Every structure is written in structure tokens, then in C-alpha cells.
View (tube, rainbow, N blue to C red):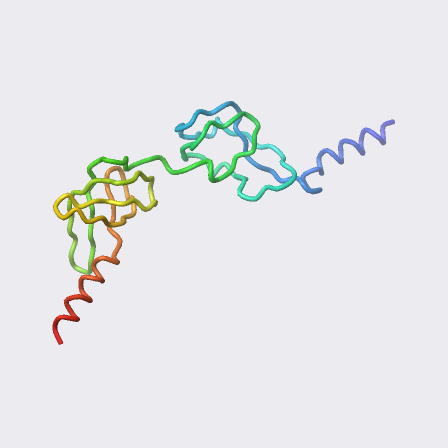
Length: 159
């Protein structure tokens, strides 16, 4: 009987090595739009398909939930995002950088985004839209593609 108990205990401890993966799951129900903290998550063992499932607390802490998360359910990385720093319709500061020059302008956000995400910004003077990367609350770094196009046009006019 004692051997059986030791064997059962050994199998339970070794279970993750036989096809289970350690993942993070919510310790309680978490509402949509909540920023995740350490106390919101616990580790569990998952079996089956674990593609795209969060496996580390470092991967999820500080991120915002896109949907309501249920306690104990596996957490997919696509269920999370960086907290929104640029809201749709808000006024943002666009920063254009080139060697030796930094320009800033105001624009209107046509989409929302978190840190490092790409958003669309409309120039209120020309109504042209550009893409930019969110760098902080209400701040966007304009992508350099537009500046290169402008310099190509100037070069083509001057033979």
C-alpha cells in the first residue's frame, strides 16, 4: 500500500513532464478593461493545445483584458493588450524625427492603441491620414515612410 501511495505521488509531481504545460490562469473572474496585477493570476497545469496560451506572469502583468476572463480558464495572449494610451477621436501630439530635426504637430486619432501599437492619425489642416506608433499617453511617433516619399518627389522634379 505504501508503494502505491509513493507511486501515485511521484506521478502527480511528474505530470507536467508527461504532456502538461505550466500556464497562468486568473485566480478570480476579471472584467473587461482591467489591468492585470500579480495577485490576479496563479499557475496551473494545462494539457492539450497550448498554442498562444500565456505561460509566464511577466507576459501578462500590466496588460489590459480585451474580454471578461473566468477563474481557472487558460488565458490566451490575444485576450490581452497594452492599456489604451491613445483613444479614438482624441487629440494627440505627432512627433516627426529626421537627422537633426524634430517636428511636432497636433492630430486627431482615428483609432485607439496602446504602447507600441500602430494607430491612424488625421492631420486637421490637410485631412490626410498617416500611421504612427504610440509612444506615450496622447503621443505618437510618425512613421518615416511619408518623409521619404516627400524627398523622392522633390528629387524627381529636379533633373
